[in-house]
Amino acid sequence: MTLLSLQDLSVVLDTPEGPATVLDRVSFDLAAGESLGIVGESGCGKSMTALAVMGLLPDAARCTGRIDFEGRDLLALDEQALCALRGRCIAMVFQEPMTALNPVKSIGYQVAEGLRWHLGLGRGEAAARAVKLLDRVGLPQPRFSPDLYPHQLSGGQRQRVVIAMALACDPALLIADEPTTALDVTSQAEILALIAEVTAASGMALMLITHDLAVVWQNTAAMLVMYAGAVAERGTTAEVFARMAHPYTRGLLAASPGALGDILPAGRRLATIPGQVPDPQDRPTGCVFAARCARAAADCLPRPPAERVLAPGHAVACLHPHEEETVL
Image 1: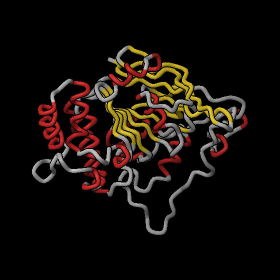
Image 2: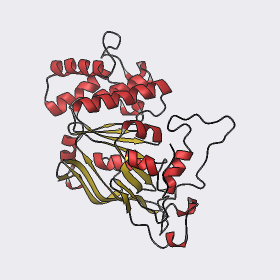
Image 3: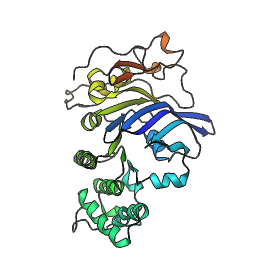
Image 4: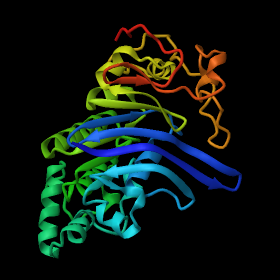
């Protein structure tokens, strides 16, 4: 059953310099219990997609299209209705836990707050359940008291608190936006394993946003590759990695050191994608990746390419995709 469905979602921000298109006709479906990875460079619309689903877009944003969650269009809901959904039905793990947590409230209070607000639990019952949630995410008593404050924890421990907050009300959808940013390698692996464990055990749907292809490969069943606010390639993770039809997808892989466990040979430089993501206030009229693409031709310039189905569970928005399979 489809839990979340985005249909031609576009987001335009009104700025002093003019309108900026940050999402351009983004569409995808996510079923209950499924996992979806969204990958791309910074500025490609990954986090903006998550914020749109959460109803946390800036006031200057203008949205078109639909975001259906359990049959309701989230774009048509008022703030009170969205507040009832956030945390209860849809929860988000933000990429910087220090800014996601309140520095003057204890971690136990912050985990219990959602339980009291959404489930109507009393102070004592919510506090007891908060202790269990902290233990579930690897912060057990007595070593980690619920009376601790965020500044008394490491980055990885703070991220565990944020995950406990997100899991508190057993949401149907968990959005993890770059959940391992600024963490050391060991903490990254632990946090990703924790997210995979709790979502699988609870049957939650997972939307995992990252710039790391290896994270998508290891943790999701389906994936989107986003570029300049649009979907460049989509499909099952296995199918997309097997073919990597879009030149941008292959560029991301080439620029990722050891993305699939390989060791970069000594002395070899990482590949780079020339140029940069286009300014959302000055989007090209044709393929938004054409200026950076070695396969671009004259027919890429007049209009954006329509999505092309390559195989069941795999589509690409490119006029000249790679046909040969990758060697992983």
